[in-house]
Image 1 (cartoon, rainbow over the protein chains, first blue to last red):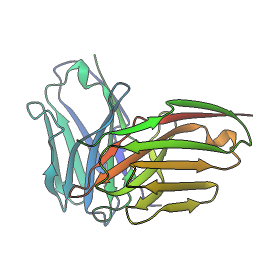
Image 2: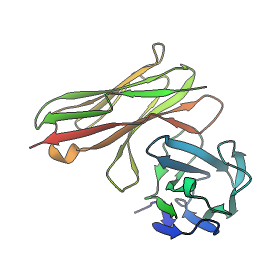
Image 3: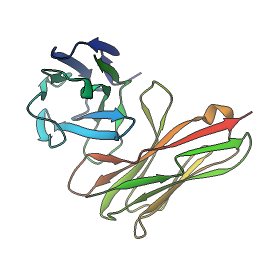
Image 4: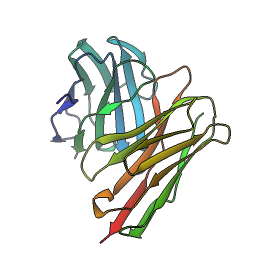
Amino acid sequence: DARVTQTPRHKVTEMGQEVTMRCQPILGHNTVFWYRQTMMQGLELLAYFRNRAPLDDSGMPKDRFSAEMPDATLATLKIQPSEPRDSAVYFCASGPTGYTEAFFGQGTRLTVV
Amino acid sequence: KQEVTQIPAALSVPEGENLVLNCSFTDSAIYNLQWFRQDPGKGLTSLLLIQSSQREQTSGRLNASLDKSSGRSTLYIAASQPGDSATYLCAVTQGGSEKLVFGKGTKLTVNP
């Protein structure tokens, strides 16, 4: 049963700490997305990759956020330093090729206190 | 900038009713439109994907239509069931970019 796997599912951290979220896309999918969901803003794209190359990270606060794909089976989203306004659910999604169906992970619920 | 709007924000219906959820988008230059379902505390499950050249897609009790020129899509749910209770999101992919632009969703409650 192919699925996008995200870890951790929940994370509570103190302001100023580094947070790393991980995503394992579905094997064979070459497009990977990071989205953030909040009550106020809904779902917003932070970054996306095709064949591990970053194509669009315009939605990401670059002073504190970074996204990478060290290999085809792992995508990471890092926040350093974290702030209370970063509290949200972070979703990873993958797709087999561009412009096709996107498959979402279960999300990482981040709380920064 | 593409904007996606879903109305109503919340909808409550009795079991068995047929219902329609609406989605509108401001820029008709889309590549496709996707409807998702999200259960509380869960991820998004893709329901239907409509390519810009298509008018509708069907899966079981679900039917999604697309009118690209008017910037509208509808999701029709037939014979609703309590298990259909969830938030339904629509998202468009803009031509030239693979990123999905989402509406804020319609929270559906089907009462037994």
